[in-house]
Image (cartoon, rainbow, N blue to C red; front, side):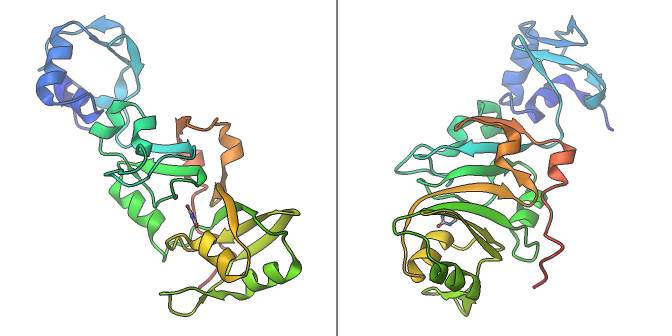
Length: 243
Ligand code: URA
């Protein structure tokens, strides 16, 4: 790995402009392996040291991969208009790093949302070719009946979509709850599929992406964590699904 000057290193981690990072260092607010360093021109191999910034430990990360338990009442769009954006639930460094959500959840949908500053990762995860299945838990307004499951599995026709869209699997959880596995992420897909099948989605949560479950992360609504290599390895297409 290439060495970086300390101001560039701090900037790469989202601590603000280069000038601001130089100021943090000059103020004695940055230490490398426990020793305060005030010369921002000093170079280090980024992943070879322990850092402290503004009194908090900092682990250097070339790129960040984040899982957020999205609560209701937040928008995924960059320029949120009616509700606060999901980025407001993350530290300011993530905004400087230009962390973006992978796809979108509606403002009233809760559950597992991935975010990253790795454009390639975002593109691969969002690509229909990649087909990472996603599991949604839907609460329905009318009781779930066999006809609903049959229709969702057979495929329903949505306005403005060519062909029909079907769930990869569909499991009844209780009288008004079902888990739907989808390969695509079309606009309001679950809500529109339920409506097209004659029911109504009263509440929706994404509980799994690929093999990564929200439950395994133990995040309360509004909490987030970094995803490490083993968790990222679970975000792969389902080998059982070919299309
Ligand atoms: N389907 C929906 O209808 N809404 C979401 O937020 C996600 C999937």
